[in-house]
Length: 106
Image 1 (tube, helix red, strand yellow):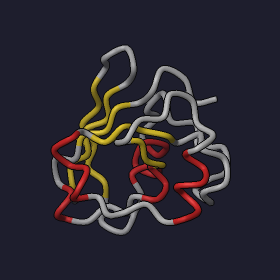
Image 2 (cartoon, rainbow, N blue to C red):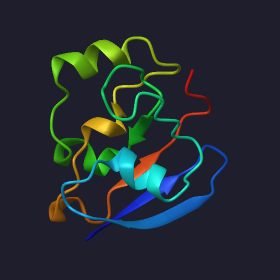
Image 3 (tube, one colour):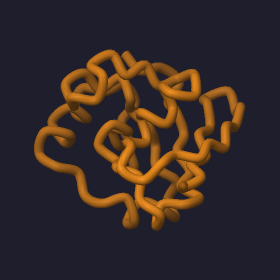
Image 4 (spheres, rainbow, N blue to C red):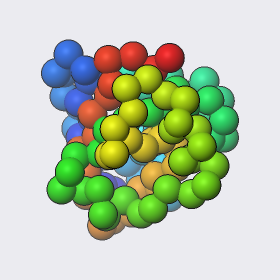
């Protein structure tokens, strides 16, 4: 298990153990974390699982694919460290990953 730290826009933190092979989005949805809507269920087609990756982790989560980069063009308040949490697959190396939710998803 990898501990993922989800920080809601208002500051509430959730430390959740997520099994390798699951997405960061699935970890949030399975545990009722507010701020990740995941309307498409992880198909990289809605952008409602947008998160900001903590700067220390940006290089460790892997690169955006073309579909994700396209979806991120349409999210609210995109930043260079924006990612879709459905596209980040948890590995043991991501133990301690910190993600922050934007103020709104759409």
